[in-house]
Image (tube, rainbow, N blue to C red):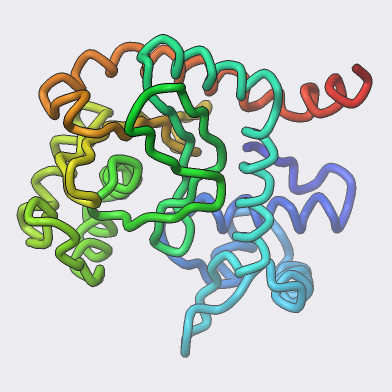
Length: 265
């Protein structure tokens, strides 16, 4: 997102500060924010204090460095969820679920866990359920692996080594070195699979949903009983999921238009 810091006044400058901090790979000082946005330092301090008071920015513990605040994270989560809960995007999900004959779900990462925003079920035996609001671990789900794979190398390694990885099944990857190798492969291939790593007898795969600038906004995936689809057979779902993810990416920025249209109709 590109915002003009000098366009219309304090609100534009406040949004520009939020946009800048959210886009950085490391925490920023007020002086760095002011310099990069060409703001007078007193103005930057005043706006930053107001944003902190509203929970949109916060200081990293025991430092002067600023990061996004909890309220901004919650706002982003709700905005992403709303963007995917439209008739047009749900129709894409229904189409790909019908094409592959399996449940499909859209998931994001929140508080180091996968949270599902939308899902479409199909009428088949041994059906699984990943309803909106359901959560799952990062390290043993396809969506979690996609998310971690797209982090910068140092941030990825730090996150992996900080996770408390529980052995959910005998196939769960709990060794950080082994998981990092899988994540490197996932980053290269832009898709990944899980082999009974979270639930015994369940395999799955996922692809990223990207917006302009190749920023990850969510993942599109499926989870199925291994009795119906083997780990190797997941490969046939890759192309349909990639096509659907591209359609979702193309429509995600039209969320406001969809919102208006659906309430007019």
